[in-house]
Image 1 (spheres, helix red, strand yellow):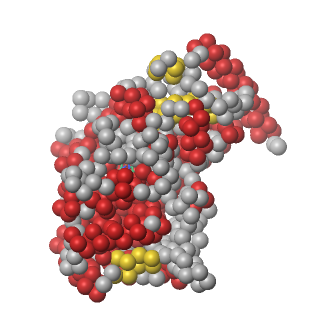
Image 2 (tube, rainbow, N blue to C red):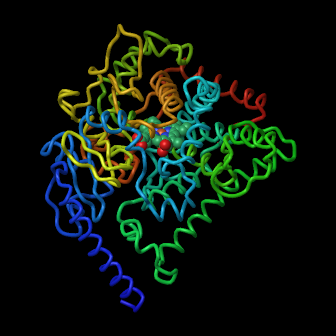
Image 3 (tube, rainbow, N blue to C red):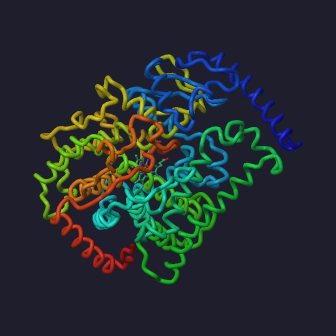
Amino acid sequence: MDVLSRESALLAGIAVFTLYLLHSVRARRKGGLPPGPPGIPILGNLLQLNPLRPHPTYLKWAQKYGPIFSIKLGMQRVIVLNTAEVADELLVTRSKLYSSRPDLHVASDLVSDGQRMVLMANNRELKIARRTLQGILSPGPSKKMRNMQDLESRVLLHDLVAHGDSSLTETFTEGPHGEVPERHWFSVFRRYTTTIVMSLSYGQRMNRFLDNPDLHKVYEAMSVFMHASEPGNYLADVFPILRRLPDMLAPWRKEGRRMHEWEMGLWGKLLDECSSDIAKGIARTGFVSDYLRARAEAGLGDLPGNGATEDGVGWMRDKFLAYTAASVLEAGSDSSSTVMFSFILFMLTNPAALQRAREEMDRVIGPDRMPGWEDEDRLPWLVACIKETLRVRPPFISGLPHVAEEDDVYKGYFIHKGSMVIGNVHGIHMDPARYPNPSVFDPERFYNADSGLQWNSGPDSQNRANYVFGWGRRFCIGKHLAEASVFIVLARLVWGVDFYAPADSRTGMPILPDVKDEASWTDGLVSAPKIFSVGFRPRSEKHAEVIRRSYVDVQAEWEALGQPVDMQ
Ligand code: HEM
């Protein structure tokens, strides 16, 4: 160990011990914490769970300690909420107190320069970003994206059929951080989800999934940022005192700033290109160009820097605007495609459910046209299958952590200011009182042929079918867009495409990942199926003809809209 590392380790040790003493005295004085598994000094419960995959352990502890339990990860007190009732009470009814985020120094202050909304405390900037995005993502405005969702989902069907058996005949290996190989069928879906949010933000579509560095960069940026946010990766996140160390003793600072520069090469470049097109009088759509034009009309054409103006309006400055668009690109890409991959996996592992979905589709729609949103009410089995997919495998399976902004008391339990508070989505979805036989994939629990269709995914806390979109003031702002995408893509997939797993040459059985084995899923914030092999072909010649024709029509639409046509 060199001198610098020895000094850093010594300093860290002293800091850890001092903070540990302070925390223990405070906790003892207040008392009344929710129950929880005993930990060890300093590390608390850190060694008892995998921080990148905590949900199986959270479930075990929920079964032992009940609706609310408390653990300690190093110095960080964590309160985990395991029933819909307690999560609704704290994260919705008391949302004012529970809407901050953990203080992630490296991911937020350094990598994001404090501008990434998903990591922001419950502050003025967050309100400004949310208000701006409400303007494009609340129920009415989000419907304006339906034209793009319609056209892009037609392209997706064509791309899948063109992909055919490629993912069965080629060998693919995931990258060390779960990177998806470009030619794998996952990329066909990823192009769809990313092109939607790219059109929404910058009015530009992604017209190919192969040889498209910008598409990969969006996922790379997410991977960099998620890696930087992983609990325990940086001591400076856990021990704020270390943030005062000089640069030579704080290697994370250089690394964080380097990541920020790299990110700005993507997010900053997108904004710069948009500004320069506007300056040249080139027509651009998308919320960023609308925002820049409105800002210029307000006399604030040039507004470099971070944060927002101090006036009553609170105009976002350039970097804040670039990162708000980035939040849409990041939050809207991986999450929605994960649901699509999980749906395909659950349908293939539950062939009777898939067969029933196809029969419903044939009865209601037939082979001569593709389904649309107007058909939703008449496809209750398909919707039940999507809801059950969301319940069994929510993308953010351990929720996104909130933070208590004040001391609070719940049913006699003391919750310290600064505690991380986690809505245990998996625990709630596996609560047998709410979902009998919770580990079984059973769309029947959501099937109701007679009642009008409702997605019931919040934000109201009554009668929610699932908790995949979070809670309260941090509730997912893209829910309406996401549900519309998930529905149209999966309805059209079931309608027109026969998707199948490779068969074992000896037994003839399909080769599929074991959905109950955690090793089949990625770890980290978003838990997605790891890549698996699937082939795609049209369900009949008639379906093939509709898919072909509609792809040709879409190309004409792109030209009319001034968008690039598709490329293979
Ligand atoms: C199926 C797809 C999606 C899922 C499962 C999902 C889920 C979530 C969850 C769990 C949160 C955190 C909620 C909380 O802290 O309580 C969140 C936040 C967010 N989502 Fe989504 N999301 C999806 C799609 C989208 C889309 C399509 C967009 C944008 C177009 C989007 C934009 C955001 C943003 C900007 C935030 C941060 C909000 C904040 O921190 O205040 N999401 N999402």
